[in-house]
Image 1 (cartoon, rainbow, N blue to C red):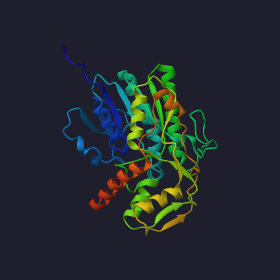
Image 2 (tube, rainbow, N blue to C red):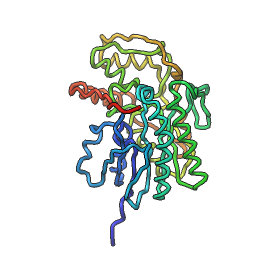
Image 3 (cartoon, helix red, strand yellow):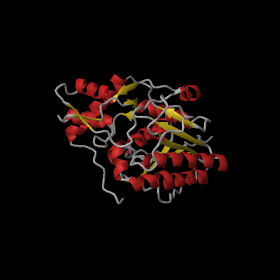
Image 4 (cartoon, helix red, strand yellow):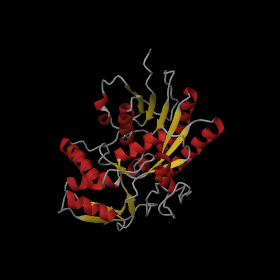
Length: 329
């Protein structure tokens, strides 16, 4: 009797921070994985440990263009391709809009053609600068569609709308995860997000730069917890958006002081003006994830931040500062 075939999963953005960690989890769960990435923000260093793995294949491709895969059988399509940090999507506004719109259309089309389940990596940015706190999935958000951050916010909101349209019109098995601030190894030091920014500055003896007065809040989830929630969602029968994040809220000033305490007590904290439309609060309500998925974060902040610092310390020592490649805008 032949052994059952392994599930086959496509991960777009597969060389990125989250895409590479998701790939590792899928391989550990017995999947074959086809990773697709055009490497404008992804990094081959994130997947070099997979070289020679017979269950893994990497395809360099921009999913905003038509996707052709010869495989007859695909079981899952995970759409994680997108610039996802403020530096990236502010420098790459049009590719960000394209991958949210055209990329989502193409990956949904691929999933439909192959009869695969589809999971969209959406974002807490769908809530904008929220007027409801903490944020539940039934909150529609407070987003400036024409502001500089709108290219990312609205791309993801459109992607959610298209995903639900394919679910309702074509009867496709689709899922949507709204990802809150996540941190861990394989982030880029210079990607503009607060965790790598503060750690990188402290490790290299620079002042820790806080934008605004530091009273704005974030909720930081360690990457292994996030990936566990995403995998559980992919195996569920739930089709509405689900928040995945850690509800432990802290101010940016508190986070800067923690990094100062752990890495560089002599590091100075400096303050600069708050960027346009920067959200003042961000905290997930994870009631739905607890109820539907039986999920909640388990990694304590102290444990996760130490693992992250050690990863970045190695990057600094090797001169791997994580610049992205130049692309046509």
